[in-house]
Image (cartoon, rainbow, N blue to C red; front, side, top):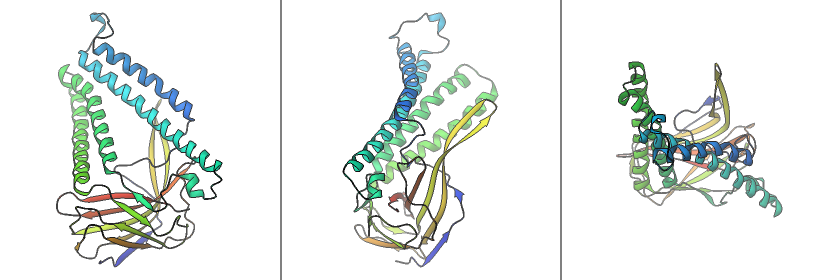
Length: 313
């Protein structure tokens, strides 16, 4: 292959676009996360039952169509389920660490994460399910505001703002459709670890097995990066917003020099030379650091885009 152009950078930068949470810790104890999700789920179920006319209320106390109440209830209920799923993931990670320590596993990698020492496999249909759920959640959330803007004849400022968010929904739907097309075309793919685990500040070689559906790539990059994941809080008046941040500490990139033909089922070895001083992987601790190999190939039809976790300890 024509992987002759290698560049690397240790300039710290924040990653943008679709951000996937990699760490298991939420900043709250598991029981705290569960309790935090209770009011969201409870309010959501109660309001949805009112909208479905299961819970009777006075008609004069309802100031919106019943379908808006159902949408409101589903949004709150779904939010509670999302919080509970995060609590479940944190509990599983903590339980995995406890079991590993009980078995006297002297390997930090296996204590930190449930690695397969042979390699890492993508789960494309899991991403599709998450994409469909996220798109449905956004559609339900915006349905209430669309009713306010258009059904209840809201002011023009509301209509403009809601229309902008509707464009975001269209973009999200497009991304979900692209994820479905990639899942159908390529299926799951995997990388193979030449050694397990890799050691920080040492050269690394990773094998990528080309999945079905790969044909001729006009352009492409193979990027190994080290990323710190954390939450950041911003305040506007009394409103506080907490959002997820991915901060890249280093990356090394192989770039295709010319268009290449790929044969399914073949392995491609990728060698990287990280500098000294980079942090090791930590996926179950209070401060999350992860290494990933991202492959981005421009193909006829849906492009191939996938990221694989790499155990660097």
